[in-house]
Image (cartoon, rainbow, N blue to C red):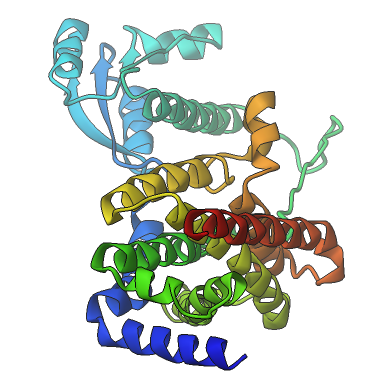
Amino acid sequence: MNNLFFLLEKEFKQIFRDPAILRLILLMPIIQLIMIPLAADYEVKQIDISVVDQDHSPYSKRLTEKLTSSGYFQLAEYHNSYSKALETVGNGNTDIILTIPPNFERDLIKENKNTLHLAADAVNGVRAGLGVAYAGQIINNFNQEIREEWVQFPRMMPLPQIEITSSNWYNPHINYYLFMVPGILVILVTMVGSFIAALNIVAEKEVGTIEQLNVTPLKKHEFILGKLIPFWVLGMVSITLGMLLAWVIFGIIPVGSYLTVYAYAAVYLLGVLGIGLLVSTFVDTQQQATLFAFFIMMVFILLGGLYTPIESMPDWAQWLTKINPPAYFIRVIRAVFIKGSSFSELLPDFFAMVGFAIFFNFLAVRNYSKRTS
């Protein structure tokens, strides 16, 4: 126990002596937690639209105004030539072309129907798909407004109507930040835990101090604990700062208990720190550790359910998420923040994270023993 105490003292002094490590652990998550939710938004706005108006009627102008006033579209071109509109698409100045045919208003009034043409630049498939969907909804609303103007119903409606009302549980205002900020916080804590812990041990290999530790009576598990505990403490500090920022910047506080978040974070950090320590046992330079950490973090992010719902992934990818630690903690922290889930309701995820912590730290101790025996 004395050996572990002196090793922890040495680790904390080494960490606080190096300002670069403190900046990585504390400053980097703060900056990224502020910037990423503001930049990585699911909602597509400022879609450039060219309107080919071959009618120039009050209805066509009204439809154009309805599109541009929605906040999703900005008018790039307004003329009556489809070929010129295609040129703006080729130049990258237009995302969607709306063609309003000749006699649009007259045929709509006389025949009670008409056809509009939407063409989208599908180089960016997501932007094109969402743009067409937004435009379709706005056109449907425009059509509904016109029909209500034409048909004057009496006060007592002669025909039965079905009215549909909807409510969004847990996130009634569809607050994007409420969904994304907790998930991004998990990824940042994962980076602090796995990446920095790996670099710390590899740095000692490069300067040679690891050899001095190897000739001491220090046991293998004491060495791993001495490297794990300081970064576990800093990881808990990091998640505390993250939740404080979520409250100050985005006004987000968990509906559930902070204690539930901390309980799961404590176990989760043991698991990701074990991954970092395991990586450090089979690399010899910080460059190698950085490349390994980059590969691991890409897998964590893409298969963690942060941006893409796990249920929408292919079957093989869904199976891989079952061995991806961030997927469990992202689900847990979103459930606590948004739904107010309790500790007992999330027990399967807790047991999975305990399993990851035991597995990766056992491998780290075992692999370190093989390398130094």
